[in-house]
Amino acid sequence: MSGESTATGDGAAPAVESPPETALDTARHQLKQAASHVDVDPNIVERLTYPAAVHEVTVPLKRDDGTVEMLQAFRAQHDSVRGPYKGGLRYHPHVGREECIGLAMWMTWKCAVVDIPFGGAKGGVVVNPKELSDDETERLTRRFTNEIRNVIGPMTDIPAPDMGTDAQTMAWIMDAYSVQEAETIPGVVTGKPPVIGGSKGREEAPGRSVAIVSRELLAYSDYPIEDTTVAVQGFGSVGANAARLLDEWGATVVAVSDVNGAAYDPDGLDTHAIPSHDEEPEAVTKYADETIGSGEILELDVDLLVPAAIGNVITEDNARDVRADMVVEGANGPTTFVADSILTEREITVVPDILANAGGVTVSYFEWLQDINRRSWSRDRVNEELEAEMIAAWDAVRSEVEERDVTWREAAYIVALSRIAAAHECRGLWP
Ligand SMILES: NC(=O)C1=CN([C@@H]2O[C@H](COP(=O)(O)OP(=O)(O)OC[C@H]3O[C@@H](n4cnc5c(N)ncnc54)[C@H](OP(=O)(O)O)[C@@H]3O)[C@@H](O)[C@H]2O)C=CC1
Ligand SMILES: O=C(O)CCC(=O)C(=O)O
Image (cartoon, rainbow, N blue to C red; front, side, top):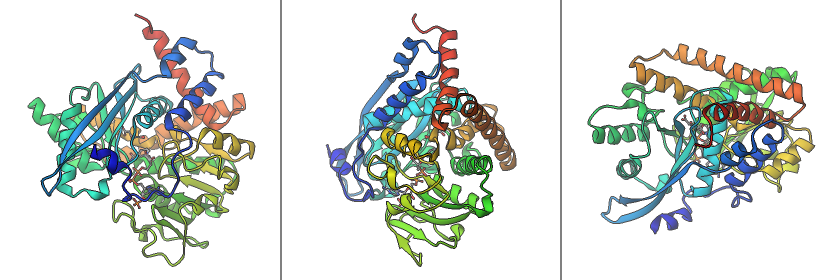
């Protein structure tokens, strides 16, 4: 299938080697570790070790030259005890079945940490979006929507953007789905453009929550933000928004990177002058005076490191070279399980993805509420409510850190797993 040959194409030029642990391995290890801290029915843990369903489809893509390529695509649905499945869709050459399951599990915990009434899902198409024209991306998206339309819906499973997809992709999904249903159904996806029911502030939200959590961690650790140095790997929806906010709030952002490498200035970069992935892909190093490698950014001697690109970048091989005092995970699963133990042993504080980047799905929830009510919120209201939700989640996790003397990741899992297990107990697991 040509989707498989696309998967090994060189267009994305990954800056890291193939993953030593799959997202699913990591997610399962983390669940097992969390379960050891919580008084939870082992049958519930066993249930949560597996996805409820994984839908695998093949999508014919008609290229502009008239040829047709068959692409592989997935939608993994993990758990819906607290509400409809929720999670992003990525277009990336390395999308895989196990990766989608692991990412769907993280969505379940993430929604529970911020206490929003959704479960976890994730999906994607095995394709390099940088090799597609806009027309090809639209055709692919509409056809993919048709292939999964029976398993998505505003009350069942609600996709959103992730790597390689954006607001326009969500608009095409909403349109393709609505045409089939013969009515306009904005709530089938979130992360849409505001003109068709998207929420103001959704695009910046995951980066904003990474910045909020970083700010809280710095205050908690007695690091004045104006004396703090930061490095951010990935300058897309998550990384660029996080870097720019931290810059605005007084931190010195010394390095930001994309797939080609990093712009570096020990005196601080002007993050607004560097094009984000949305503004111009692969342009971070284009205008920089000084550059370093994409991997090197992870080993800079900074106070705070924010990996916000792809998964599995901090591994057994480089975890001992990380020199930051704190890591706030912007990407999903940037730290492998083994690397996480090494960072813990080295007393490097790691705030996990399921808390740090949860602002995206939180504002997706606000968007879904706005769609149901057919009433839009102001950007100020969105940002104020996001701030309140993130601080509540931060406080819940911080309490567990303090009371149980566990890592921030264990604490976030304890909060999530307790809420999910309580819902399973209450609904009854075994019919
Ligand atoms: N978008 C969302 O709502 C959310 C996303 N996330 C997670 O955050 C991460 C980033 O997503 P998002 O910001 O949306 O993605 P984008 O596609 O907007 O941006 C990704 C960024 O990472 C860079 N990048 C890609 N591959 C590599 C690589 N191999 N090495 C270094 N840099 C690389 C890209 O560079 P280039 O421009 O050169 O391609 C780009 O700057 C993912 O893990 C995603 O799952 C988490 C929560 C919500
Ligand atoms: O907004 C959403 O529904 C999900 C965003 C996402 O995929 C994520 O948080 O990883």
